[in-house]
Amino acid sequence: QLRLVESGGGLVQPGGSLRLSCAASGFRLDYYGVGWFRQAPGKGREGVVCISPSDDSTFYEDSVKGRFAISRDNAKNTVYLQMNSLKPEDTAVYYCAAGPHYGGSHHCPTSLYDYWGQGTQVTVSS
Image (cartoon, rainbow, N blue to C red; front, side, top):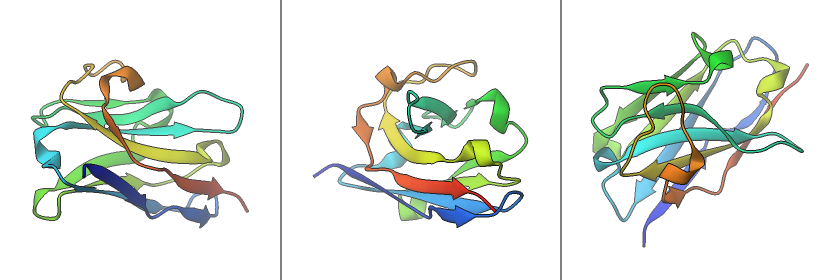
């Protein structure tokens, strides 16, 4: 069974950090592009950070540039999202997704991704 499971969400104060994990089972995640998406209440799902299958290109949503970073641990079949200097506007449910395609460094549409996790809540509040 092909599956993605996110973890690492929680409540953090503004300026704090969290690291989200996306663990895959049933397939090799390093063969796929991986995206982190988020969805805030009342808003659509948006791409936050997306990496190409070959790891040679990465998309960063403008508001997270310099604060968020994506990385892979192929031995653990896991992708991480390191989030630093968190702001209240980062509050959302965060999802990871995997797919064979990549949208390029300027956009990351949800339509490119075939496999999705269940999401993990990130709340940034004092």
